[in-house]
Structure formats: C-alpha cells, structure tokens
Image (cartoon, rainbow, N blue to C red; front, side, top):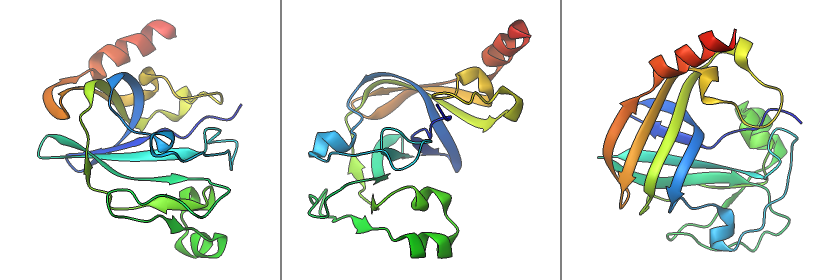
Length: 169
C-alpha cells in the first residue's frame, strides 16, 4: 500500500499533518452523508480534511473528496466545487488531481473534545511506503488538547519523537 495522505491542520502560520487523534467531534464526509471512494492509491479513504485553528478555536475549513454523484449537500451554506482534471493540471496542484470535489471556506466551528498529534517537516528517510506516517517520522510534533473545540494546552513533542528515532536505529 502507498503512503497515505493525512488530514491537514493550519495553526500559527504552519501547515501540519494529522498523525494521531484521540477524542470525538472532528467531522468527516460521512458525517454529512457523503459517500467517498478512492481516487488514488495514496488516498484510499477518498478524502482529505482541512482544519484550521483561529483564535484557539478549531474550524473545519474544507475538504477534498471523491464522489460518484454531483448532487451533494450544502454545508454551512456552501456547495462543493467540482474539480476538473484540466483545472487541476493548470493549477499544478497534485492534491486537486486526486479528487472530484472540494468544499472551501466552510468556516465551521467544531466542538472537538480530545487531542490531536500534528507533525511537520517529514524526514524523507523515515517515510514509510505503507499507511500513514508515524509521529517519529517528523522533525516537529505538537500535541494539541481541545475542550469544546478550544485549545486548552499545546505540548511540543519534538524532543520525545527524536529520542524514539534514535532508539530505532
């Protein structure tokens, strides 16, 4: 199996990848009645969610996904965009080329309760060509705790994951 595309988080001008989650309240396409399907081996589940943190509140910003139907629900007052291969090639966005649709600018506040482990700066030599990447494959790792969708604590786990990498040698 190919390495899988993770969900994205945008926090303090950083693009981070979801590498672990514990809790409830993060939404996915099926929560909106959307059935997705694989469009590329690098995304077997058929979607990538995008979350952002604004003023310590977690927001569903949007998501890319594959759907066999075009009559899709409105979410937070927004209809999805249909992505064309031609537009995707023109934009040079490999993410767009994997999906048929995208919801943008949903600005939907979430009530996530739990914590998210987020990674940045993937170490290419630690890349695993199977499933999702381990936290130890990233130089920067943050664990962000949420209560009712609001950040209550942020821990930098980068030193711990570095120790894990050294032990694995």
